Amino acid sequence: MRSSDGELSAGDERSRARPLPRPATDFEATAEIPRSRMESDAWTPAADAAKAEPEPEAESEKSEAGAGRPVRSRSASRADARQAEAAARKRQSRVTVAASVLVVVIAVLLIPQVRTILRQSFTRMPQESVAIYFTSSPKISGTLLDVPLTVQGVNSGTATYAVKVWTENASGKVDGTTTAKIGTAHGLSAAVVTLPIATDAAEVWVSLDGTSQVLHYQI
Image (cartoon, rainbow, N blue to C red; front, side, top):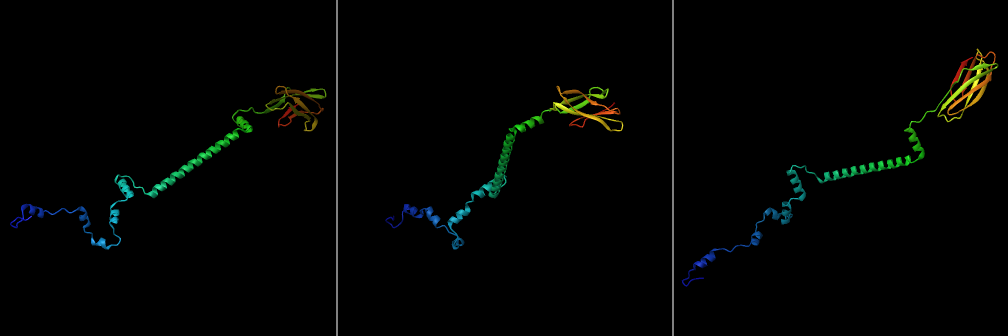
């Protein structure tokens, strides 16, 4: 207000000298934009904001690198996952094969014939053996020759043994021959085989059928 003498009062001078504060919106709106950005058709304020914000993956990689840990890319992680899946499939396949083999083995062991063979393979089985020998020396009784024989069989499963007895002269010619069967008693068989003897007989021979055993005695 003006005083009566045409001069401004002190209060008017202070109010006129103090400028009013400008709103922040007016300041931002009037911020000067570089001419190079304005001339570029691709520039927008949103593009500057996108450039200013780092990508999450890049920030995580930078943080891992700053912490001293190796940076792993997505391709490396996918490769590790594929390798782990392949290893798991291999383990599953091995387990399946082992289970199949076990089932087959159990099924085979249930067969009676197989169990018998296995039991025999782990058990000491008695061996079969047969022996023939003179019980005493052959004797001449007139025109007959008495030949005492003994056959001993062990686990042979045979109840009767067949023998052949013959005589030869000094030149090896057969003078007489006979066959006989000897029955067993508790695995031991004894008998006396008698056959005619020639005057020129020099030796008596005995063979056990089914074996290569041969006895020889000089008369």
